[in-house]
Image 1 (cartoon, rainbow, N blue to C red):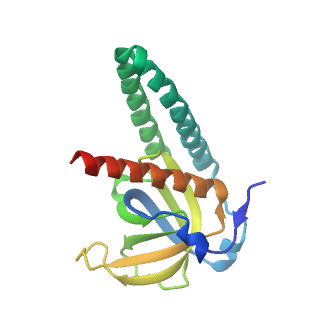
Image 2: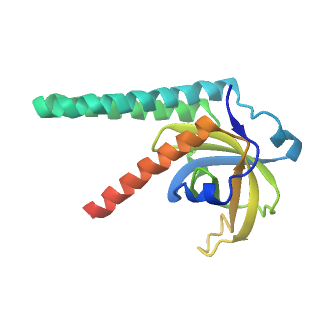
Length: 200
């Protein structure tokens, strides 16, 4: 049975998780508190894509170990297999975008961790509002669907007319496998960002 957390993560637990600035595909809708208290629901078609993303992530980690061994013996074959892996990832991303309600215009800058999320939005949401959040973590091919409770709303000082507000929320009733996906995504993106800074 899936373990679920029905309360926002606070205090010392929050400090165990890194936060990063990232770009994700995100949609949300307001829900009532009674819906949040129920078991988190996921549509069948989303579940299929979620399983695809999780399976690809596991296979990718396994293939990286094999590729490292191959590079020592035959770098040409290793390079070719890396190209094939990139092609498969592009196809999988296209499948995810076509078979879910995500679209390119829903991509936005966020500050994300395994305990909560801050993002720019058009709507003047209020502290205490509950949201159903759907995220496509594009760099790790993962879909996360969860609930969140708005903790704050403030003006967006970036002078963004399309998104005049910044909203911060804590996840509520999040499935542990979704939290693990976010943790892996954050760690992966953090390593990519560090490598990018070293190379620049």
